[in-house]
Length: 423
Length: 145
Image 1 (cartoon, one colour):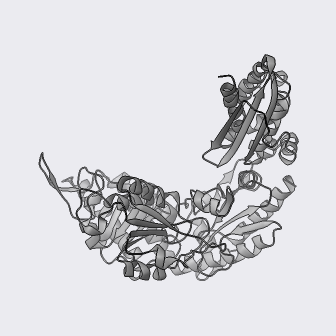
Image 2 (tube, chains in turn orange, blue):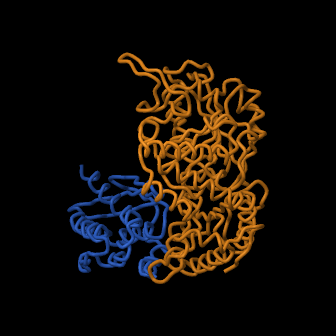
């Protein structure tokens, strides 16, 4: 196996941190995990931090007046500090822990047209517009469809070009004085495209609208600086950034979080409760009703520590090399069509493709079974994008800090075999 | 390599050269079924003649080799049989597919469809194999009501 492929990143050493990568699959096949865009594997540092917390410190947070409660609260809130630092949030109180990115996106959608709130920026009714893009994950489509149904607002869409880029040609008409919110992916989970936030944001500001970014596919893979990014909200999830499942994050500008009504009602999100009304805790706790995913949040803090210790610049550089290698190697396979940018300009390490005449399910099955190569097949929760390209499904390889070029070689060998089976 | 056993020659043959594909007139009932997890879909028409004789099964759709081959094989098995006979095959095929690879298929009933036995070991693919057969059963019910 190739050892050092990234700048300042020792892949062989990193792979030792992820025990699952050295397991074998039935039939003595090695595991070749190229599905991190779906969910990333976990390093020992995260696994141990979570085990240690449960074994020695676990108690409920924010409400238990004993040593364990204090230790858990401290660890939970320290995780918030770590995440705030990891993404460059101006304030740690702007980090809201959610169940996942979907919940974070829904949380923002529920703030609009909500009678429990009175801020004009979140009023929504017939005539108001919500702008999405054709490349969105269903998580960033369905909450807005539901909102449009509740309020009578209209959904509008950024088209996607044949090259898999956001089509900005009609942006001045698309985002206008009727637009209340623009919600788009920072990086597409299918195309790998990194969207031009600054260009979109400039128009959003002119129109007096708000910008929400779904950063589930970008935060895990390159340095994040939310303050510099300038959006109003950013959603991402823990399990794609070597953290556990069950924990996600919504970052929002403090004054917006303060203006929004609560999402779920329950314990620890209140200030005081009477029988006829309640007042609410300030953000972030206003949005964290009930016992939160305590151990998961602490695990996510450990994931941020881990990635920081490796260095996000190094992670990004490594993935860039892998992506260049993959685009070159896949480009040599006859009748393989990459869906998304075929150059490295503004693109991440997610490569989706079709093989003429062979359904992705068959591709994925044989890659897994004959070569131990785990990829994702299907529409990747982005059906409108696949409809736009006139295809039912794609095969997707997605890379992370622990992947190597020899794993991409295995993918390519596997694809040649798939073509032989279905020739 | 377990999946190699799933991709039987007969299945690949039906996938590459589908029998009876394309929607035809006349028909008594038409149904459209989808597999929401993978986007496979099929439109199926049946024409039932005197004495419950299946005069035509026509279909169109898209999907993986398993779903497309299953539709093609269903066409072959149903053509010329009676509704009652084909329902017995559908039931046996369903039993085999839902048997998690532990059901001994009745070859006398299934005929060529026994080639799908290997699919039952892959829970994620069982729905692919059943798509056309469930659509057929549905269409048959609608054609007689």
